[in-house]
Amino acid sequence: MSLLVFLILHLIPGDPAQAILFQVGATAEDVASMRERLGLEDPLWDQYLSYLGGLLQGDLGTSFLYKQPVSEKVIGLLPHTLLLGGGALGLALLVGIPAGITAALFRDRFLDKLVTGIAVTGVAFPAFWLGLLLTKYFALELGWFPSLGTGSLKALVLPIVSLGWPLAAILSRLLRESLTEVLRSPYLISARSRGYSGIRVLFRHSLRSAIGPVVSMVGLQFGGVIAGAVAIEVIFGRPGVGSYLVESMRAKDIPAVQGIILTIGVVYLLANLLVDLGRAGLEPRVRDEWSSR
Amino acid sequence: MNGGEAEGHANGSFGSGGRGASRELVPLVLRPLAWMARFFQHQGLMRSLMMFVLFAVVTCAIFAELIAPFSPTDIGYDILRSPNRKYLLGTDQLGRDVMSRIIFGARPALLTAGASVLAGVVLGVTVGLVAGYGGRWVGAVVMRAVDVMLALPGLVMAMVVVVILGNGALSIVLAIALAQVPIFARMVYGETLSVKRRAFIDAARVVGCSNLRIVGVHILPNIASQVAVLATAALGWSILVAATLNFLGFGFSPPDASWGVDLQFGRQWIYQAWWLSVMPGAAIALTIMASNLLGDLVADYVAGGARANERKIRFDGTI
Image (tube, rainbow over all chains, first blue to last red):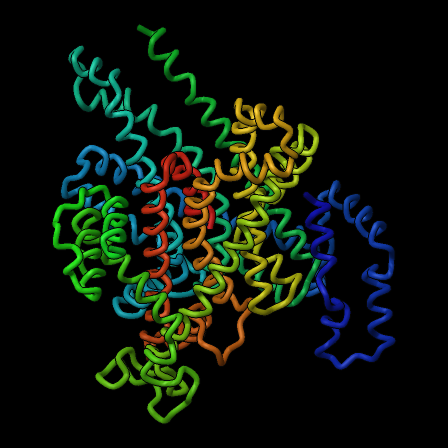
């Protein structure tokens, strides 16, 4: 992974040393000494080894743009992005699961059509466009929330909604499908015929087996959240890993781009690991159900 | 005679039996209408609307010069006009007609999405077939590489590729294509493994078919329908990613019409002129909705679509 990231970024055409010095009108000697100082004259292999060595010590290199360790900058920004992403995922679960249950219980009736119809828009709306619409109505016209910045908790509302909305839509669609399937299965009929109440059957018997795909989806969505955060952070002018990535990419700040992409990869992998563990916790459901009887 | 055959085909696709004997009397012009009516009857209002949108977008992309009321790049004195009778969707800060720009923007959007899905399918299917058919070691090595690619969200992956290749339409296409490769490769790999185990492959080998022939003639047709479902699902995803890349300022060339770029520039005028950013965004959203629906239709129609349908959610979840 680190090799891949390292290699692809060194294939970027254009000399970072020149890019850095471009604005100040540097001479050729300046550029050469800058290259020397940045270690760009060493063979690629040496560069990779020293990079890897640093990586093991938690050193992601020094940003060309900010003259500051990338790891410091990324760690400083990560909480902002995680807060945004966590909030969006939380919202998605909070809205998506009840919506999915409703749609499955009232399948093919009005409520289902309403939920599914809204969900279709959620999947198709680009998060940045949704963010823009929300800004227009709730920030500019109604003035309920600020349109930019990070000042207060209120400033988090619109970014979280625009990032979480598509996720909620997908989760509800997924839960609707899997729950419908479960609701048709014979063991639910047997549970009902034993006299368990509808609520109990829904929560203890159906939901536990239907929630599996939703849980693994949440893991996948973590990647979507991070990618979506790129656009959302730019739109709402929020500091964060995403907007930093865009900024460093424009400036060809290779160590920063490397560091951020590695961080995103690692966070994504960790999230998926967590989700796999969570699924493993849910998986023995059938055995538990039957042995406890 | 021919007409009757075409009707029969349309009937077959949507599962209703052909009934009238007067089919041949229906004039050619009315036939699409009848087809649309039948589609509406079977698929409902929402799907019909979306198919209309898809049709409209494709028409705009092909005949933009004929449809657009104004030139998309001519600047004029009527700046920042709100939507009115002359400029149906208003004008921008340079006096360009927003509607004409949206109509012309359909072309790059569809071309980018189509080309990148095509490239992604070709590359991904090749990788998947090689990994699936090439034996244990080849498969293990190739799929490990694919896993690494999957460790990055598609959009981030595409951004990296654009930075490497530089700005431009072609690099956007390649970036989006490469971001899809692991998803197609994974699916094809799994399918190839399961098809490979079946008896007719052994039979083909016994008869003396070459490996190339086995893969091309015996395995590929068996996974083609799954690939088709995933590819239509990838279409909407590609439009979304392309728009996001454009929006973030990657791969654009300002004077030409592009939904993502127009949205990005219109954003600065959100106080004075909401239509500058809202309208291109609506075009993006509607097109994605329509192509997602196309994906659903293909999934319904194709045998084994439901299985592929589960996979295509991958695209929905990981922008």
